[in-house]
Length: 624
Image (cartoon, rainbow, N blue to C red; front, side, top):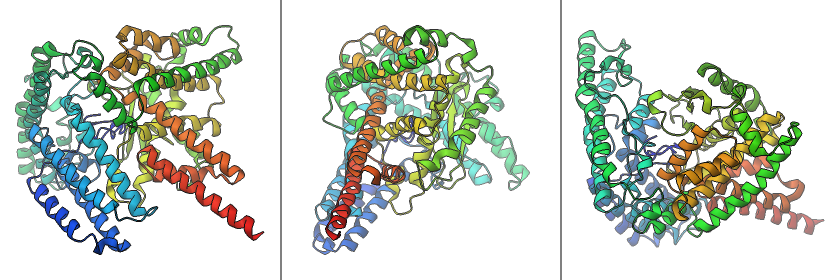
């Protein structure tokens, strides 16, 4: 799960959660003129570009121009990728920048469509252009829907972004230290811009639910000891490359920036939320209580699923069908374990069984690390080729950030200076059962999110925008849910409690489709949604309530998991049925992971894989 929009939440990758959130700002003054000149050049040279090599060069030039603008206008994400050219800046959230973004995205779309019109069907250039256009159009539609007017919530507090910047920040020189201080001093401006976006939401009656808000995001009292703040931590260890006098000046300036810029800015956010915004929250928990709320929800579904045709009713019914199917499997496991009760009764029993939960934070973290390293990793060669070498670590979610999901993943930096990280909320051990370990490890770690991000990062023959800038929650989360399912084929669910934990997780994702559409379109109450989840999964009440508030805050996103998984399974079944014994699961997974992007375009690549096999068998039969 994370977006800052480079992460799967505003300012965190779903990535995963927080690379799913990746906000393109695109508001450089020089860029629009440059793009206009580029468009004129394209229009005057279309005939010359009929040559495939020239077309490929022109497309790659456009992809690179686009990506350089993305990095320049999103310095936080550039740092995540190991590009430190903009380390003294923060992204802009101004309304003016968003208006410029619309213009620039349209110009890039026009340019890309011109190139697509003369591309060769089935070529890699065509694939890149189709993906570029689809992704950019999806982002433009998302922006036009007004989703940028919700930059702050209990899921996306401003300090989350700064905390994640710190994870990718290493101070080894005076320049790097001064850059971080410059970022701290830029926080008030960014916060003011975020507040103005939310005021625009108030002005247009387009606001969050009160369930999406926090009362206090942290202790921003100016009497707080600055040196105990996590923001000061990078300045504690003195680098040998910085002389004593300059280091003293750096520390003094860092303290001043934290005390007089960062703390007051975040206190201003808290005051704004509590004294102004809360007075204007939407009347209902669902977005249907907003002006044109039904249309807005349809936009959110289309954005997260990258499928403009699917309706809330279809998603709701899909969820109900999956809940019914998985419930039967859960009942079978309960019976196998020797209990004469329904799975609802069994779930209630184990969620209140203290032996099913961890005794300490360290116990939980070590268990997840051991499962990933010793039980899952050694078996991956059975289903995958080209195993990524990127390092994965497991860390606890800091207490001050424990307002979002139970776990999330952050991608490794492109320069390998920061490993991929599976963050786990160990602050509330009663929400972290042992029977979830295998499933959650496979989802956030391998072969889930870490695997999919590391896999595409090692591809040297695709443009950077495909590696780092394509966002399709149905693909990202659908793959991670499919990765959980692979536990059966890897022999990882032989323990029946672990198997039950997997089914509970799976039914949880199916329930999401039901309650998300229920609350946002069908008039469900929050309590109705909580009770539905409680009756159909083994998740704790605390986790369920937190999840329900997440769906209220982030409409449509939670539907992507099950939707994407079902799409991938459907592709696999089709390939297996047509290819029979010739089907190669390792090749199938390679195609899925290399073609990181919207599932309809991934499906085209699978179709080509199947067609190649059919042509080969036809030729072989003719020769025999």
